[in-house]
Length: 171
Image (cartoon, rainbow, N blue to C red; front, side, top):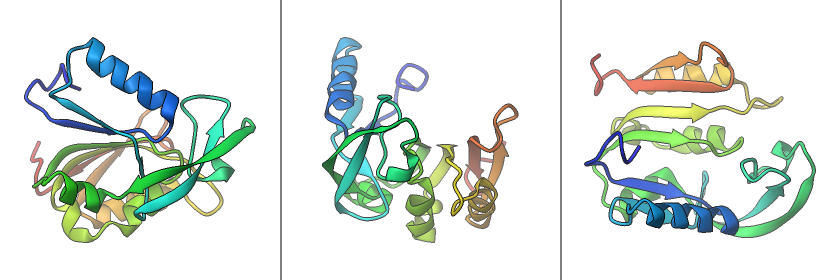
């Protein structure tokens, strides 16, 4: 993203220590310290501390224990923030692209976000995790109600979606 959008300011949230260290290392390695802010925190529906479950796979840790399908390697306590708090903490007027890959927490995070924040988001790129309680169709319909035109992935329509704010993005 930093190379595709050279004038962008990027905020990356990573709660797990090993992944956070790798993120910081890669930012430094690519000389992007001034452009990418790495924050050692999870994005959740509430601010505060939460239990974070560690998967056998570095890419699949989650705030939701039921998302750990390959065996739980334990847990740790992490700090959490919300999208609304991110707007506040970093004095953001808008988010051009919001990319979420938060292993099942996307439903709660997006459902609790007040509507006026959706008006400040241009594009949402999202990985969806389906469960008995959470269906991709429901989240897609919800984003439509927030003013987004949703484009499910052609190869994985129940897993990846791209949504654009129809008031901000006219193409």
